[in-house]
Length: 400
Image 1 (cartoon, rainbow, N blue to C red):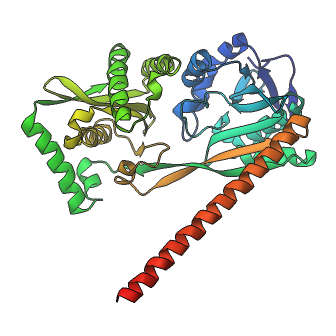
Image 2: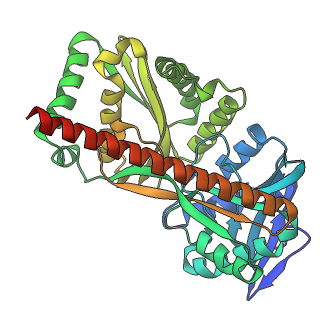
Image 3: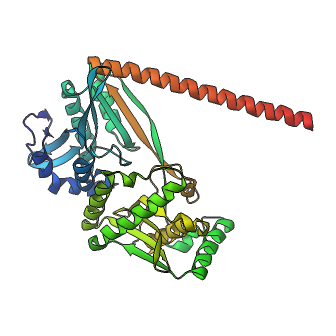
């Protein structure tokens, strides 16, 4: 399995191949998840189950561009990439992206390697990407893990070719490290917060027959996902938004990912039922002692009971006490309910580089112009806010 693809680039003992067709891609399945699970902090969005489901249901015209690092017959690293071609400004613009990234909101994208040789292998993968620069115009890596060394390796590999690299914060992902018991976790919060959680649950239980249901078996996953999709659509309507789960591509993608994760003992779902009717549901992925909270939905007709909050509290308690997780990751998103639980957060990076091709140069100019305009807009907004604050301060002085 060390000879994926026809061409290869030799770096020390590491050989880099490239899987460009579905047959070569499928050959990687037995090794891919083992690499992810062997890493210090595995991400569900890097697993083969996620990438292959995305390729089947979401990809629209992309080409596989999966770089594979081997040492002899052992696969020691994978860069899960693809190439998307867009027609822009009258040119075909070829963009290298992470496989499984577009349209489905992953986090913590990265190159996958064995941990003990990570620096060496990531550098080899970056050099191989640069050596194939005749095949791309732009590299656009979004949702890159904060701890990833891939951006720095890419900067180093591109430096001799004078290809500019831009790195900026993409998103913030709240998370919390959890103690060994629910009682210990609650002690981290104010008396007001503890009272809020207790009273919401008590009120619900006093007015309805409630049941907390967990889902981990593959046989129970399809029905749970259907329930969640209905509840998620309901909660999105309340915000006057369309649920992405109504997309004809996203729904089968999510169904397949959930089922395959369950088959690998990485799926966890939960729902809250009132008088036998589901009123809130969620699911996420459990890898080692980390849980990634991916999707949720609730019945808006019972929003006054905070059914989503009650279910989330029950979920955290079950994961903490029964499954012994050490970290609960809320993933990307600025929703206030996440920060009601934690102040901890991680960043993800957006990394872009522009090849010295005609299309790459044009995209570089477009990017720098857009960045300048965004900076000017932020500056004007900050100035306007400062003027408003100054006006209110002056008015307060006059009144007093």
